[in-house]
Length: 399
Image 1 (cartoon, rainbow, N blue to C red):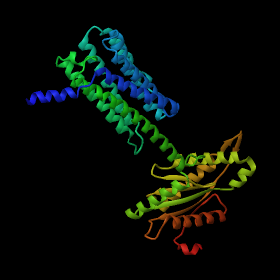
Image 2 (image 1 turned 90 degrees about the vertical axis):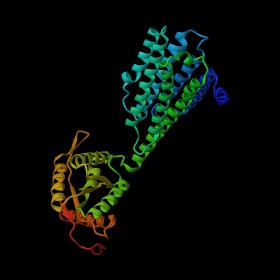
Image 3 (image 1 turned 180 degrees about the horizontal axis):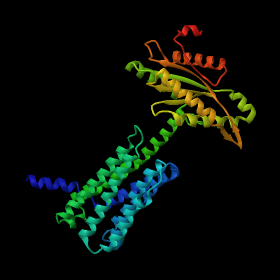
Image 4 (image 1 turned 120 degrees about the horizontal axis):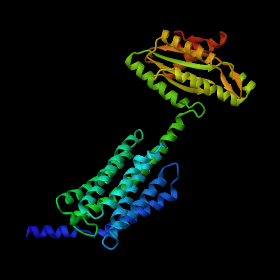
C-alpha cells in the first residue's frame, strides 16, 4: 500500500516534458527581449540577450523531439544550447571590458556541432558527448566568474550556483544513461527523473541571467566609486580619498607605534606656468609630475592630489632621514624631467613640507597637515625648490 501511495505521489510530480521545454523557452525569450531593449554594447548585456535567444531556440528544438528530424531536435538544439553558454561566457569578459578569448569560448559549440553530426545514429555516445561538453562549459563559467568577480561583489556566487545546478541536472541524465536507462531520458518522454532534470533548466536560465545582470551592475558601481575617489586629471586619489587614507595610516601608526611621514608637495610658480604656456599646458605639467612621482614611490606609499597644484604624500614606516632622502630624490627627478607639451619643454620644480614622527593620542589629520603646511611655507619663504621638515612645535604656535 505504501509503495502504491509513493508511486501516486511521484506521478503527480511528473510534468509533461515538452511543456517544460516550452516554459523555459518562453522565460528565456521574455528575458532576452528585456535585455536587448535596455542593454548597451558596453555593459555586456546585449551578449546575454543573444545567449538567451540561443537558449530559447534550443529548447524549442527539444520540444519538437519525435515530431521533427533528429538532426534538428538533437544536433542543432544541443549546438544552440552550447552556443548560449558560450554567449554567457563572452558576457563575463564584455562586462569587465576585457578581451574575449574567442577560440576558447566558442570552441565547445563548434565541437558540439561536429560531434552531434558524427554521432547522430548512436544514442548513448551522442547523449554522453553532449552532456560532457555542456558540463565542461559550465565549469568554464564557474572559473571565469570567479576570475572576473568584482571586489566585494556577490554576482559570481549566483553564476557559480547557477552553473553548479545546471551540472547537477546534466549529471542526472548522465547517471540514467550510464545505468542503461537512456530511453527514459529522451526529450519526448515524461517521468520523474526527466522532470527534475529539465526543471533545473529554468533555474539555470534565471540564475545565470540574474548573475550576469548583477555583475554588470557591480561593475558600473565600481566605476562610479572609482570616479568619486579619483582625480580625473592625474588619475591619483582625489582629496577625499587621500584624506581617508591618511586617517587610516595615522590610526595604524598610532596603534603600532611606528613612524609616519606626511608631505605636502607644491609645484613652484605654477600660476606662472599657466600664464606663460596656457592652462592646458598646466594640466600637462600636473599629469607629468604625478606620473614621475608615482613611479618613484614604494607600493606602501600613497600619493593623492590635495588641491590645485598641491599633492599629499603619505609614507608609512619612514624615518626623518628616510623621508628626506626619498623626497630629495623625487625633487631632483621632477626638476630634471621637464614636461614636453606642444613642441615646448616646460621645466619645473617643487617645494615640500614634511611632518614625520609617531602620531600621539592627540594627533589628527588636521594637526599633522597644519604642521606639514607650515613647513611648506618655510620652504617657499627660503627660496622654493627645497624641503623643510616640521620641527617639534605645538599646533598653537601656528595660529
